[in-house]
Length: 303
Image (cartoon, rainbow, N blue to C red; front, side, top):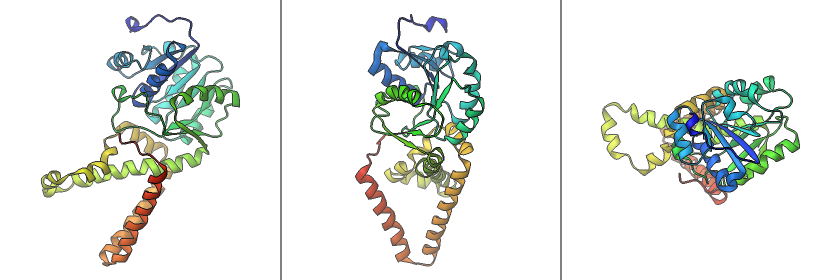
């Protein structure tokens, strides 16, 4: 794709985005909007069509399948492929990274990645584990938005070994997204992400599966589908590769929380079968009170 390569002038910062999809593309759009020619962004995409599209949209300055061209001389490498592809990709790009390069990622699970990366990273290549808590059910660079991170939680996991000056260099760039940054222990991140993100996606997919398994009632059910079902199952339209990888890399937390959910539903089933209206009422009332309290402090993304 040499014909796509623009002229490179004197640039202050080089950012490489591995996986220019929804998240990586949104970061690119945001930083180009904020920094303009002060940043040069290279991108790796899965297909030539995606490369051309990411350049046409302005998410990157150069998209190519040449790894050395993407990450060579990069100050920051932003890893945004499915979780199970992150460590193998780092192994591929390591020979081309300059001393002092900073690796960060958008992976929804953190412990698995860090446990593997710390085995292979040389002392002059740094990793800062990150997780922007944002997204949409749509995927691909076409769904990217320069404001995707704005006002959303962005986790920077503790204890991944990067010295303060390295962290500050990265944060000076990431803060331009106007996300709400917080630091958290890496193990606690994975447990919390399981509860507030991973299990809800699995539950949404389960509700769609329940509908799909309705047998002779399926056609009638489909005619009755309204806003409630669409809203509850919206996230079931998310990328299957991404979510399969998340389940494989945060399995303990997800399995434990699914069992907790199973027990909660089991108690509701028992209350219904026992015609215990008060128990069922309390179940709904407590969940309503908690969600209403959450709504007082958190603005949900309608997308």
